[in-house]
Length: 295
Image 1 (cartoon, helix red, strand yellow):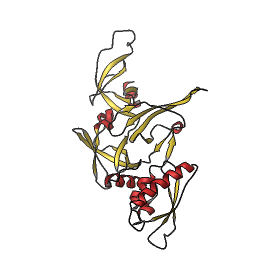
Image 2: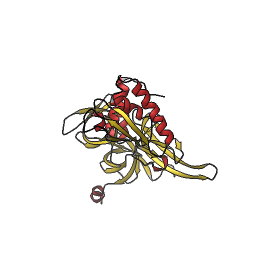
Image 3: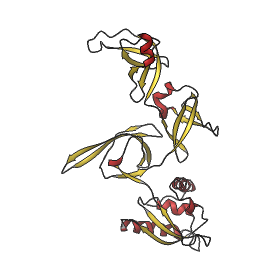
Image 4: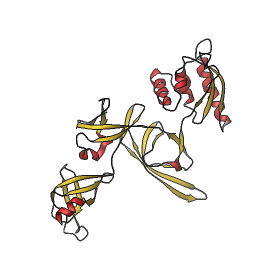
């Protein structure tokens, strides 16, 4: 099925491909197709030719077509493609340009990667390969987070199942304030301010002091993830009496100075600084300075 030829869809696709080293192709005003070759799969080459032929048929009477429309069509083919083009200048005439949509197989997924599945962008939180039987084969269990909605998804993939591997841009941003449904960050170099949904920040918002600098990941110019440290420090505001049941006799409820409630050991008192795992929201340890002070 061909992509709908709406300017918005074509522009978004073309902008995405500029991150994968095809700026030279985009710089051409128009070009004509001379030859096309897709590695490994002849069926892919046939499909690409069919798509491109349709695009060129809708171009100008001279057979030229805009680069953005051609690139949109090529994105439907998930493999490495080399394309010979005729440019508008003698220097570029007959130049070979490589186009590639990076793909990754499920068995190579790792935490922190950004992928596109069924048209949606996800951050990989967990990925674990499970060996299967000779009949059923293995499976890759994953935990994904939708970067736009924040929705969690735990799909299972076949080890050789392919999906689009997204190349993200990391920028150092400074946290300013939070309000409503968003948190505001600023680029300290350009002073550009962006709003990031609170759902993307999660519980980490309570540990963000104004002026804290963090890495923010961007894809197609849109923030898709904020990289937080695994362990953060917070001061205990007050603690509750220990539970009476034998199972909970070594833990008690505590409220941190940011309002977050966690469970801490019995020896932790108000005013002490503790380390908290942001991924789980659980107590890790008391800071070394606090141990020396209480000793």
